[in-house]
Image 1 (cartoon, rainbow, N blue to C red):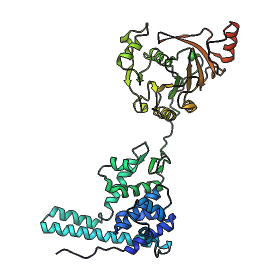
Image 2: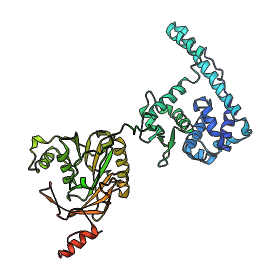
Image 3: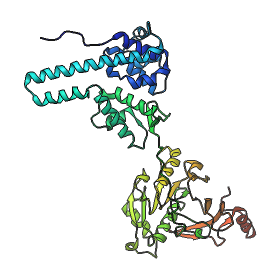
Image 4: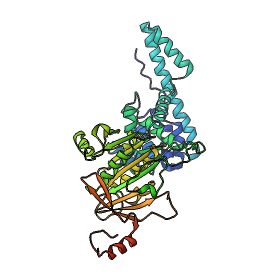
Length: 443
């Protein structure tokens, strides 16, 4: 015979709990820790509690209008308003939370007992043993919630990128859209613990707070600079150490790739060199290498990769990495963030990164932020190259701002001007004495 008795529940306690949350938002963080949506017997109260959690996790005010808007027509304003009818004092919130949880626990026990009875009728002793063990250890009460919380935290702590609830549903093993309310609750608890925080860019999107900062082992670090061969006589002006970022910004077809290829040629017999190209296929790479008359094709000791994005994922932390060139689609403002990822991935290695830049601009696309982490930042202009930033000087004279006249022969051979590196004023004076007043860019 079917048991027609209504399962244990207390609708007034469920309404009271929601009403307290609406009238006193400050109570919500503590209440979410105590009560999950699945603890509610009433479908309407469960939907309202899910709305409370959603709004609170998105740092929004929880109110009758906001809950009504969140439910998008599933409940009328009058139905939502009824939850605050006769709401008790806020000090009773935990009392009502306890009632809701206890009634939920009783329903789960009854459900487990029903399954136990069904297993006994069918003579399934394995299922009987499992259900009895569950009842004895009281695993049924919050087992699913605990599993979800553990899985969500494990997944969150393994990801570096911002994420949403949908990302959790799609990535966590065994999760489905049915688990969204509990996942949202788990994320709110992680936020309260200071493990994650909202990104502020889009509602419902979080990031892992990276508070694990390993101590630097600076005592065992090498003291000497890396004997990297820099082009254009730059070794006489600047020093380069391990974990360094070099940026070469230039307009298209003005020589930035030629500078990078010369760095490969000059260093490939001393260091492991990796060349990441975003615009050359195998035939074009071979043609560019063949432009150097003093190096046979078979003598190029470099590994070449086709790559156009997420360079930090592929670079070699302790080697020389040549990236030709870095771009962030249409969002050029992201270039600074991409350079930061590249820099952070380095250990004792070096990354040389080419950036596209607009005519007349000193910085690559992305602006001055692309200079922040660079040890050396070069800007290539038609007929000239300028040192925008040199962090470690080789002499007492500051090389920042120095300019070098430069010609590129056959797209590969670098021909620096006889004047060498000069400050703009000195170069202008030299040109003036020779009667040259045009042909070089002034900035």
